[in-house]
Image (cartoon, rainbow, N blue to C red):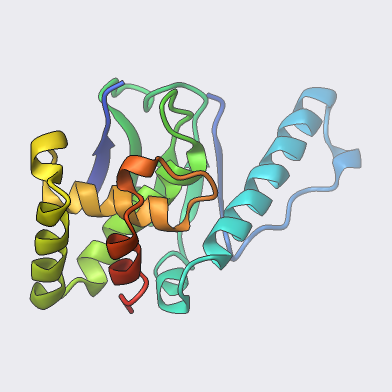
Length: 177
């Protein structure tokens, strides 16, 4: 099984995919279910809007994925991670971390897919050079893929952490197809 978990120091579950976004009619739900129904639709719309910002080839990577949201700061049963990408089951799970928004965390997980499916050796070399020039090795002791995923998320996030939003990185990331 191939699972990528996002490690960042520091629910109720909704799971759904882009292809099956039909929900039951609100009139068929109890009061408690109606609250979850409304929040699920809001999350669905937020994910749709976020994915629309990505290049078409990146959107295709997640077309068959389901998205699962958890309410805690870290993943249930795993206090060291805030996101998980299970490529075998085609599920991206995101919690509600204190330090980063869900959009950033979701985009970070998609960044792992982009790294795996689009980053050639030549692009990885370009990336390594770009982040070494930014002296990220001294500041952030994570591996090149993790820093790439942070930068990928910052590139497409509505409110990016500025530590990972570098014009040179954005330019490189936007060329990856």
